[in-house]
Image: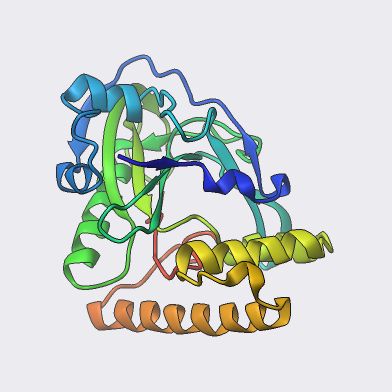
Length: 269
């Protein structure tokens, strides 16, 4: 397996190091062995204990991040612009290169603990919510919709209180595999901060890593920005039309629930 830490080449204003939660219990519920094999991870993930070590305790991979990264972005929430959005119960755990395509992939989490963006919430995920995301990603993938993949689900032994399901309810942490976690709100943040240099770096990063534009660093920035806008618009149009063809309605669609690679992810509470 070929790990990566490309995200740390981006400006630090887009992320911050965080610590995963220490869970009282860990039990493997789901493992995506097909993708683990494709990514040549079978020697690292030989048994349930290995899956829990990586995706329940989040021990760092060699040649990836020393600590997980909570990503920050902007967007509209409840009808108003919010400059203080970010990963409130998840983080970017590691990055890996797909040996079949050479593409950069992210391991992102949900329910892995509190971050500076939790805003008083507990940073946890219900087991029911994890299973919902598994079912959604598998269904949409089978229907040809561009979506993240559910990579692992670990039950974490906590009792959670939630207003939208019978409580107390069981807890879990989910790890997803996706082509990046750069959102529209990532660009909004840098524009709001009037950080032109960081904005240019982000544009080139996305073109190089998610649109296979090898000469992104050499492109004039106006040309790079125009190319990215056109490419992202095309991906989004394809994504939304795929949702419609599949009869899927994203009930929690906002700036952070799809990425600029044109994938949907994060399917609800």
